[in-house]
Image (tube, rainbow, N blue to C red; front, side, top):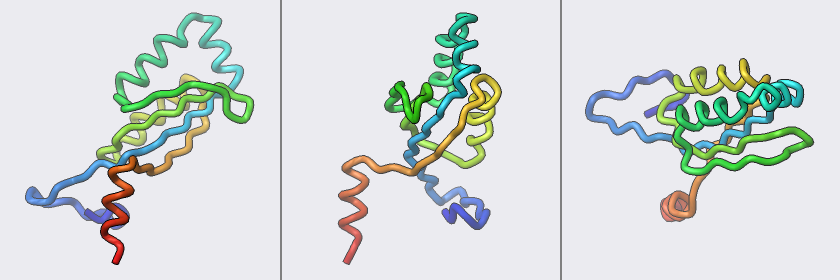
Length: 113
């Protein structure tokens, strides 16, 4: 499937999800308010339930609370439903990066001739 040209896969084509690292850097004031109000655990749970990441890490990045989520992005149309709650609830700054695990790298390297 051509990811950039708008081609729609036919029923016989296999659509492969792209493993993605999402870095969500939270606005400090919005994050602090979520903690003070007691809503932070619920908002994080909602995010994880929606995305279903294979890995989720939390820590500081450039001085701000940050979520690092690795998940399979099945279709680019999922981006708004993932991004908007993070924007609305946390004023988050998002960075989306395609990533590979070791199996993916080995498979890719085996195709280089």
